[in-house]
Every structure is written in structure tokens, then in C-alpha cells.
Image (cartoon, rainbow, N blue to C red; front, side, top):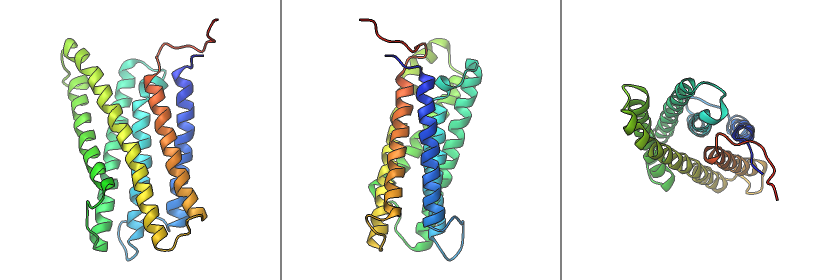
Length: 226
């Protein structure tokens, strides 16, 4: 049985809503909300998981699926794809700034974990990927032959970066939850379960984005003949 890519995107959208809702409930209900300055430094950190999950991963995933999920002309799809990736990149940079600000004001060393190393590397490579895509496919644009040669590598590298970002988000949830449990949060409490389910929803979202990307654009729902 073949499935239309747009049907896969419906599942991805639903998982995106679920993951976004859970990370907001976690940061607002359990962690106290958001702030950019103040005596409660935790409120500064709370910007990080929200911006990285909703801003970077979910919006980035929606950008990746734009060619499969939007019934628009290719030129319009390209603009949506480019714009959403730009928004994802900008919010990702702000999200990383938030955690650096939290560390600096809390007198915590920066870049001490594998999660932070991957995160910084991913955002830098994401920026390079966006700049390359803008210059090659949007403005001023490469020649037709160069575009055709570059497109598979652009798609492959973008898919690789998105997969890394989703995987790194699970490292981040694990790292933060471990610190919280060490400070007294119950290992089998509602907050711990919420964080774990948020990470699971993020992984499932990533999986359906990838399934959408590898599905054929001209597929139709069909039952295999014997």
C-alpha cells in the first residue's frame, strides 16, 4: 500500500502540535514560565527548550516538508521553504543565546556537554546550508546544470542536519531531566513523564518528516495487486 506524502504530513503536524503543547506545559506549569532577566535564572533557561523545539526543529521540519505538503506552485513552495528555514535558524540562534545567558548569569561553564557541542555545530552548519541554498537556488542562483548537480547534496545534507537536530534534542531533554532529578524531581513523577513524552513526540515528529521527504511526490493511495 502506498501513502500520499500529504497524509504523512498530517501525522507530522499533529505530532508537532503535541510536542509544542507539552514543552510549553513543562516550561510554564512545572518550571515557572519565561524571562530574559531577573533573579530566577531558571526562567531564562526555559526559553531554550521552547525555542529549540518549536522554533528550530518543528518550524525547520515544516520548512523541509513544504514541497510535499503545500499544493502551491513550485516558486511559492521555494519561498515558503526558504522563509521557514530562515525563521527556524533565527529562533535557534536566540535559543542558543538564551542558554549561554543562563549559564553566564548562573556562573555555569559553557559548552561542557556533548549536547552543547552538537548544538553549536548544528546551528553553524544550518546557517551555512541556508546561505548555500539562498545563493544557489534563490538569488543570484546557479546555472541549471549546477543546480541539478547541487540539489541532491543540498537535500541530503539538510536531511542529515535535521536528523542530528532531533537526536540532539533528546540529549538535551535527558541532560536537563537528569539535573532536575538530582535536585529532587521525582523520577516517576508527572514532570519526568512529561519531559520523556515530549522527547518521544519530537522523535516521532522527526520520523514522519523524514518519511515525508523520502516519499514520492507523485504517489497515490493504492493497494498492491497480487
